[in-house]
Amino acid sequence: MIKFLKIMKNTKVKIVILLIFLLFLYTFVCAYSYAKSTSNDIKNNVFRLHVIANSDNKLDQDLKYIVRDNLLNYMNKICANCKSKEEAISIVQENKETFRQIALDTIKENGYSYDVNINIGNFEFPTKTYGDISLPSGNYDALRVEIGKAQGQNWWCVMFPPLCFVDVTSGVVPQESKDLLKENLSEEEFTLISDNSSSEINFKFKLLEIFSNNNLLTAKNN
Image 1 (cartoon, rainbow, N blue to C red):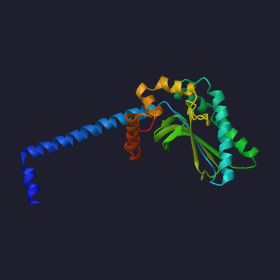
Image 2: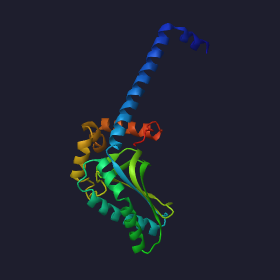
Image 3: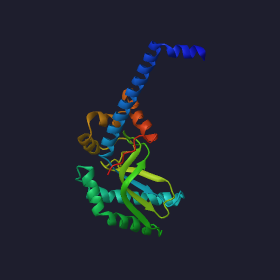
Image 4: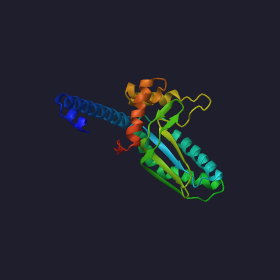
């Protein structure tokens, strides 16, 4: 302890420690700024779908997927020509009651009487991979569909750009969906969510995960 105190009295040692601290602080600030800016840009160009089953019972889970498919089919029709997230949200908002009715009709057709609650808002999502596109965890604008008691497992997807219809055999997102993302993201941001082969890109993606999972990226979209 005495030796340590003597070392700390050394001016050169103090300067080195101060420089190390400042370097760490600078690196942290740069990493945080990069993660926040990139995360916000990605979130600002994505509109997601969140379907929650009545329960974890297999029949309820199966029903969840049927409801999902019918909602996506309708979404695909009314938003086929959408070029931005804002446009997609506006159309969904105008047809919100129709979405609810489609879900209710689907549930009834399959022999159930569950109610459905639908909201458009900003909700928390985990990291999800759609084919060869990965989206970091965080708060995203989404259409949230709660079936019955909504106590079952979640199902997440992306309504705009349409990443839900992934070719399961090849694990590749339709090129049209990628093109929409490319139009609204910087080249580096698009590479960040689509290139899993680069160690540098994977490291940057991890930065987004670390800050998001520790609630340091708390800003929500309006």
